[in-house]
Image 1 (cartoon, rainbow, N blue to C red):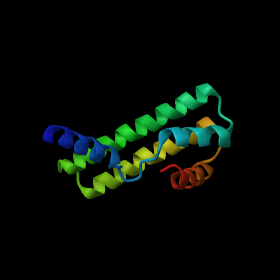
Image 2: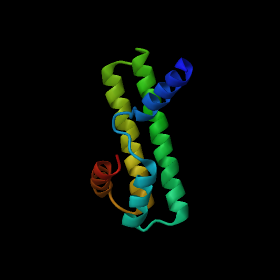
Image 3: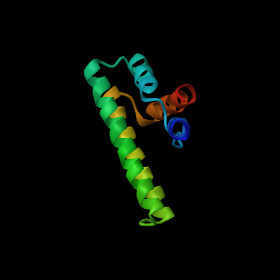
Image 4: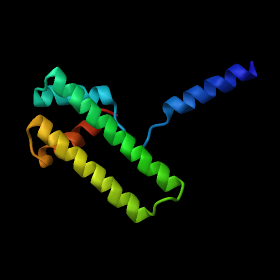
Length: 112
């Protein structure tokens, strides 16, 4: 009985934890498809870009927690990841970076 309760608590707490800045990918992709009129191929490319960005950010956070990189290095690496991601998304959807940034800010509010 105690084991079952412990497993339920672990599962619940793991599910309820959300990383800072994370968004619901499905919601994000649906909004991107409807906003930018993306094809299925473009949608899958956008999904890959999003996965790549998340993996890079996770790697940076892991290094920061292990004190392998300083706070300034974290900021500069995060900026580089975001800049590259936004540039690639802007190219994919045919818009400029500013429009993509505005879209992302709006979607973050609705896709939590």
